[in-house]
Image 1 (tube, rainbow, N blue to C red):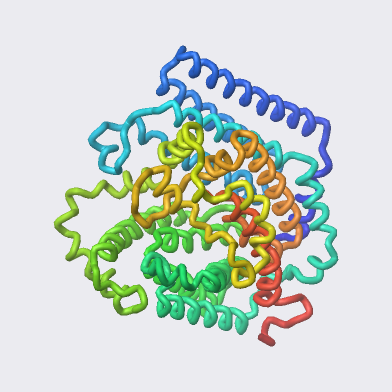
Image 2 (spheres, helix red, strand yellow; image 1 turned 135 degrees about the horizontal axis):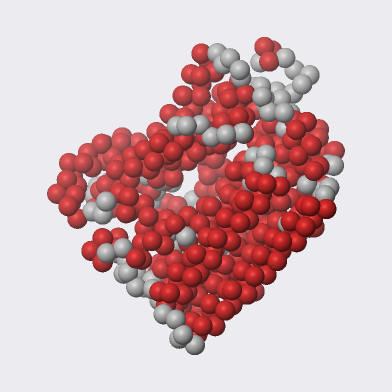
Length: 516
């Protein structure tokens, strides 16, 4: 069981620092200054051609890795409780290290391997320029996380009477509400398929014509992941779970994975296992032994099924994304269709590395911004960030000029020069660079760090209900989206919905579990 008193004590301890803690904080601050200075030195020697692009790239990658490891170790020393889901730690691993450290090994592999995923093993000056921005962003995020502003936000949330009234500390679920939420989710998914709006099977024309309402279907689809999280947290809080609790968890996990496959989105298959593992961690303060094998297996399964399905969907002129039968039929017959192509496809592990890495693709945007005047059809990067609060609140049917979040499509056509209907991830660093150069990158991630601290310390002190609200926002503030404005939109839009959802899904102390 989660100890709510321990949560509150842990949060209060963040504001009372001993002399040794203050000394350690000074050391970390000095480290950040050193990292920034070293980044500037690497940038300078590269501009003077004193080192090669490959040498500079290695230096940037190692500096970023070493710095993030130091920050993460500091968190585990100073505030170890739930440290793995600390949003700054989570972002350091998911947004920075996974994308710009571990997978950078791609560019040092043999040519014949790298060519299978459409990359060239060549380090460009623009890749180094991107890595410089990534380092600045990492430092800015951690400076924001440790700032007074983040602590003020967390204290404000902890003192909120409204949150104390609405957030349930109980770990028991309202099973009737769970059933209602799942019915809503299932109806929304089947309806989205019927309308041709679901996942990779969606029709471009139908999505555009239904733009006023697709966001509501996305929210209904998101409910499924939330219910899985709530059910998993409840299950792992029990010392002796009943068969019905175990059955409910397995049904919810299977339900999410099946619709993840039907969506044609690989994340839809992998994320449910990550959600269950995080729920386990929140209750046991350790990850289950099965998490790594399960995630790896789900990744390989997703690539094995979904990549051939996507190819078949694009090649089949008679494919209908408005028919569940058509989607299932295409998915079950893809092996026969694409068997002859098996020798041309990159190994799954290499495809995963290439999919996760953004260094080369994102650097093309840095080069484009430096050498070209942005065309008239560009996304209004800065304006979209500034107007994000309004975009989060005002419905599209009341605001016809509200942007459609097609930044990735624009990037594919204009920056990559490829005339296909496919969105390309540009990375939040490239997006912010389009919005206002290095200053926008620094300010954007400074804001992220402040919000991370405020929400993490502010919500975990509320016990289980607070954790549910926080975990519902973790993907928004932990895996920073390529379109940076969606970070602001996600927080404003989902925070109140999560408060209401956990209030309905979780039991309150004055209610008996058996009454539900």
